[in-house]
Image (tube, rainbow, N blue to C red; front, side, top):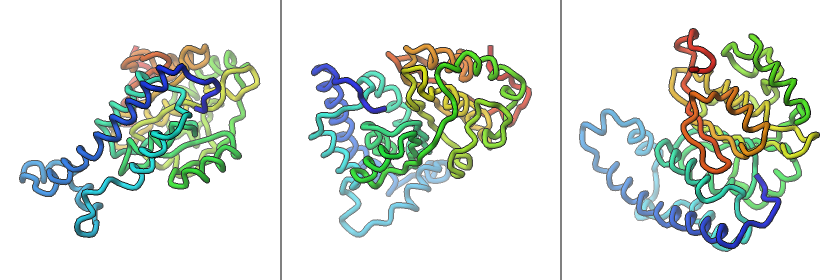
Length: 291
């Protein structure tokens, strides 16, 4: 998730334009929601969970509810003044931002911690955004700059050069059986994640880490598999939107198609692929992939 090369000037301009547009539009949306939820009709008051959650959590002093949230102000200032931008392009970011616009506030799990993390957390304002990062020293750097971000250090025991073996392993019955990844017998399942990661029902999952561009790097095989299994094992039904970045690389391409399934793929923009995976818990006879 950390940029390794400097992006073209036009990409920098376009991305900042998107971020500024999003952040400047947010206060208007915020004000609209404040007015709408303050005077809901009986119909919407009865059937809108978001309305209930919003009204019960917004306890602010008089004359302060119309202010933009501190997290939004922080993000606006940061991205307006920083010369470092996320690796993802404007069009790639727009795919996930569009889904967040529909589903936030929600639970958003991100494999990776980088220069785009503040943006994702801000776009999911009011929800919970958790970042999983392989580099502990990098976590400490980001925490000093953005202490409001929730991040955890994770380790991986795979390597990119094991991808072919792990692909074959992942097709076995112990890996295609739906269950909690924490207790899975599948070699691809990540079992050492923080406890809360297994307990939360994630609405969105972004796989943009760990490192995967050289043979001895951990690769994203296990992260992609685990994201798909979390979606299939989601309690009480529902769907999970899963995004995989860098699908121009062989591992991300093959593993996302195999374990998130071509039949669940919604679209691809540049190097970002979007899948929408339903829960399999209500019908255990659903095939691992729809076709």
